[in-house]
Image 1 (spheres, rainbow, N blue to C red):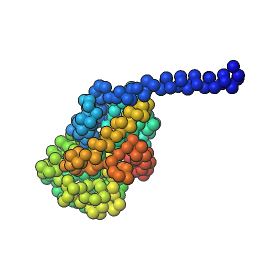
Image 2: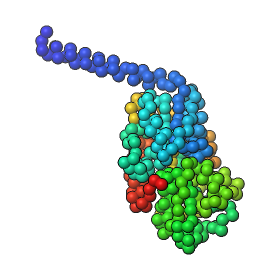
Image 3: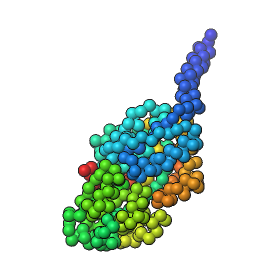
Image 4: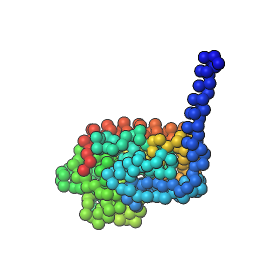
Length: 335
């Protein structure tokens, strides 16, 4: 046997070994899913993350032919639930309903205290975008954003606003609002939207800010008075509520978003399969109509609309950069 023949033989053997090692991963991807999935919602029940997660889980389950169990694991502005998914088996059976907080804001807000990095999670698909709403109790003397600003300036540091937790998009929206309006309003964070809304409805807090799906029922029922939305256009679900720009805070936009991520080492074919199914869900007219009732909008990340793992990954990177600057300029901290 010549040296050249021997070398060729070794290459063939090595190629065969590599194929054998890759085969189990390919086989798992081809058989996926063969059992129920778990979707971790890193916030309490009844908030927007929970609502959006359950809507997506129901529709995604129907497409993949397996149940999807929604599990609430709240704490540390979503970090506890997200970290649990980071540490889970990367097989596609454990996913996290990520948010603008867990996937973008928290990296700059928590800094060295973060126990995982952006590269520890793989983007699967964006699910929904929603505006935030600034609101007051129904019997509040503040009937407009101008009223709230005037009241805050007349009583610096004495007015409070509630949010679903430090680092969430409602918190950051209000910090931007304070910065742009020159007001000093004290942040009161809660462990989720539910308990915060109870306090504002009862009048024990002067104001609050939350994702629209969580608070829209209280607004429609007259228990809360909406002052403004944080999007750059009025929300179809609350057409009579002005944007912050219309209320005098120019060039203001802070839109919350929610999506699905998986552990970083999840096989790419599984990521692509889940991403394609989520994309199909977000293009379904019935899904679009359902989230529109809650004030939400479909992803529209790709040129033709919809979402994909690649487009969502690029979007997350841009949001990490954007919110790092907001955290820096506003001086926001984890309370």
